[in-house]
Image 1: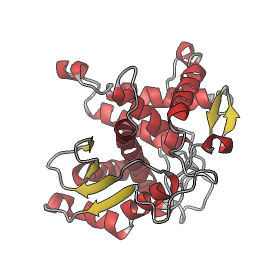
Image 2 (image 1 turned 90 degrees about the horizontal axis):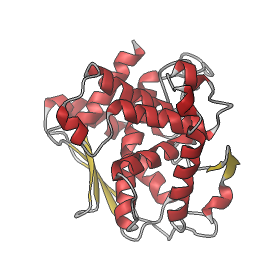
Image 3 (image 1 turned 90 degrees about the vertical axis):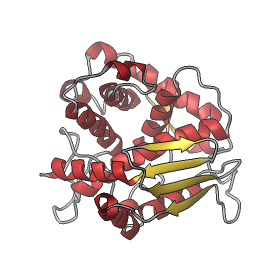
Image 4 (image 1 turned 30 degrees about the horizontal axis):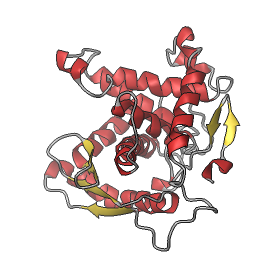
Length: 286
C-alpha cells in the first residue's frame, strides 16, 4: 500500500512521490521571497528553468487532477477546480529543492500571484462566475496548504507571504483534510512494491507536436530539446496505474491554456501558456 511510504506531519500525511523532482532540466523550484536559500553555486543554479518548470508542473498536475476525477469516477463535494488545485499542490510539496534551494510548490504560488498582478488586481464580473478561483485566491490557497503541512518550518509564510494569522490557524486542518481526502481515493493508483506497475505501463502516452507559429516555435523546440514531456510522462508511468490511458499532448492552441478533455482522455498543454511561463521566468530572474 502506497500510504506505507508516507510520514505523519502536522496532523496529516505526507510523502507524495516527487515524480521527476530533479530530472526536468536538472531542477525545479522557486523564485520569490526569502524561502529560497542559496544552496548551490551560481553556475549550477538556473532560476529561469526553476520558475518555468515549477509552474509547468503545477498546471500539469492540476489537469491530472481532472483526469483522475474522470478516470476513477470520483465524487467531488465542492468545486472540481479547487480539488484539482489541491492535488497539484500536494504533488509538488515533496518535489525536492530547486537549483537555488527553493521549493517548486511555492514557485506555483508565485506564478498565480504574478498572474494576478498583471491584471493590477482587478477582477471582471465574469471572473466571479468562472469555475476557477481568482488567481490571488489560488496563490493564497497554495500558501495556506504549505503552511498547514508544517507550521513550525513554514512560519515565515505568515509575515513574508501575507498569510493572515487567523487564516493560518485553520491551515493545518485544511492540509489534513486535503491530503486525507486524496489519500482515500488513491488506493491502488500509486505504484508500490505491493502494487507494481505492469510491464511497459502505458497509463500515460505522449504526443508532442511541432509549433505552427513563430511565436511558439522557440518554446516548442525548448521542451523537445530538454525532453520535458518525455521525462514527465515516463515518470508518471513509473508512479501511477490508471484504469485506461491518458494522452498528454503539447501543441499550439491559439490561446494560453491547458485542459483535460474527458471525451478524448487527453491533457493538452498549450505552447502559448508555456511561452508565457518562460517570459515570466526571465522577468523574475532579471
